[in-house]
View 1 (cartoon, rainbow, N blue to C red):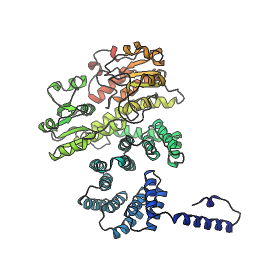
View 2: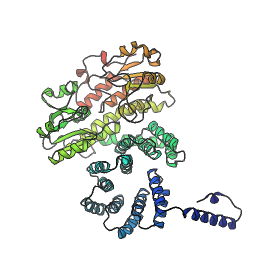
View 3: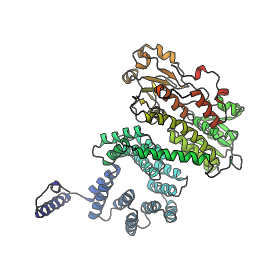
View 4: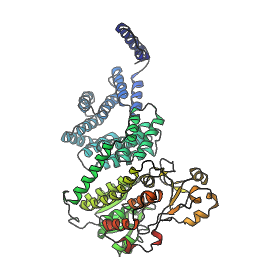
Length: 586
């Protein structure tokens, strides 16, 4: 509508006249606009998450030219996004009258049926489409949604195929759509993983940042959600959904907090009373497991599946927990590592029943190769606490040890709740500025997509690193001086010492250096800053550093003993070689 409709008039006649003028004005403007114009406008609006205007643009394109297939298809997709599912089926049928058996239209109809819980209809359509020639990304995207609606794990494989078949320049949008699908089904950790993948190549989309905020808020990452919503608003000041999300994140009510507490108490009751369905303590037939990823080793040992390990990644033989539980670990075959790659010939020669891979570019190719030999494959990504828990649950389901996964995640939640409850009781506490240094050098740090960023936030601190995407990043000495952290934390596996940092004249004026608040993550039994269950201990330790007055009554040694007994069935005291390396610097 034009500006005329925004004016106020004293009579109905004047309003009617203004509406007519507006209609005439739009008609004049439309005379020089073709169906191609409206189709391009619709596609742009769709990628901005502005579904109602996009739907109007697709409709306008069809008014001008009913032969525009992309407009038919786009209109159905938008109706699905708006949850107008019956209308989506109706319009897909109308389009199929013109374009019989078109794979995209059939897939869109299957997706609508899946959202309507008509799974038999959705699966029948999807089965028919995937047998057709071609490799259309939307066909695999819709297939993944249908499987996801039915609770089948193979949906991730279909989503991978959709992303692989998409043009590189548009890959970010398919990852965004996949993230929205996971969020629709309340799988927020998987949604966040897909959205982070989209952010690797696209950082200027308010729609994408808003979706990030929604997922983070659903996972309880309030501060991260606020930052994402604010970034979305900076990119598009008129983005209503981001404003609503920011308001929701900033105004979590008392009742919402009570509801979360009730959920936690119910989960504990469910676990302790044995109301949960019983799963066998071990698989009925002995599996043969290969871990190709160091953090995957933590999952295997936490789930007490270490007796079934036949292949391991490089540089894991010296971890005390592993050596204690598998004294023969030096005799196990090393299959490679994430850094140096995996030797697939070695993997296949061991005749495994399950291989645990990490999420990298060639993961799907390796997965497909393993499937050809009848070997199951779990692809894990653990750059968040929720990802670690989900990976535990997923692996436990595959190996029928779900009860162990419940026990491990419950112990993680106990420590995380201990930290969050103390911080919530003192909301006015000023957060300390923290800088985390990687193991290779003081000037190598993490991006905000990595686990270390979440550790700092969960510990009630402020992460000085503002690099939003990517993996490990190198910063300059000048940048570190500008950030001027109150606390510097180095990885437990750092190749340099705290003393070397304190002696470096370049950083003598840093607040952390002046006050002596430079710490090395102390545990040598199992890395606390690597993806795995032990990250919960790392968060507790960091919270004690940042807010010692809030945790004066917490005995960190007792907490470690409790954790290791619950998770690994081992005494921490018997594993630790030195109390000195395990105490906080004060």
